[in-house]
Length: 301
Image (cartoon, rainbow, N blue to C red; front, side):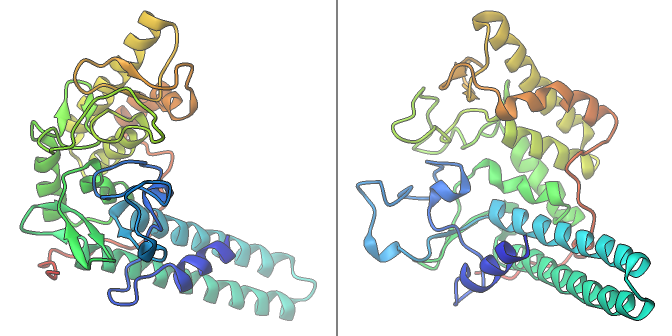
């Protein structure tokens, strides 16, 4: 775990902004999401000059923050065990001190990630988080579900959370079946049922994405929106299994029908406990830690 985090910390950063980056859109798992104009080296549009850095986005920084905080917590728990179980009191104290320093280091990394996110990927003029093309050194303003993902890790302040919530509640993002992966106002919006070769993140409802968003809104006390998202996603899953006897990888934001990969399980199983977790104000994935900054103006790109 430490080796993976050191790899991201030392090699996967844009030298001009300090932002951590996805190599291509396939690394994020969102395949053809519109924040990337060309999804991967397997795309006909790919430029070999892009081999190093392409996209920094709220999902990557949110995930990295969580990983650093998780490792810090692990280190602290390990430090406590070392102090109690060291072969001698002196050895135990030395190991405890080393692990405490390790925890503090990763908490510092987590805070830096959170600061970069809020300084460089927060678009105050739009009221939501955006992506950044590090090759072109340009902000990517497309409205996609990532606009609210940092709430899941508690990385937004109160005013940011309020405007992000309004952005997601807009008709182009919130559908009768959950939050669209891409805004219906985007020129590339589609609910096409395809994997050619990428899964469709240009419109459909994804259960994993909606679960993270719902848990994030719940954390910031937007419980009505969180419950609505959860109920709509679970209803789509229930309707699918009644109609087809199975689940699918994602769901049409137009009519709620299942799209691609019949027989899919994976993150669809989150629907089994989602409503209960939202009612009970429980996030089974929560990793605590200091990260939220006070209400301050974001630094423009």
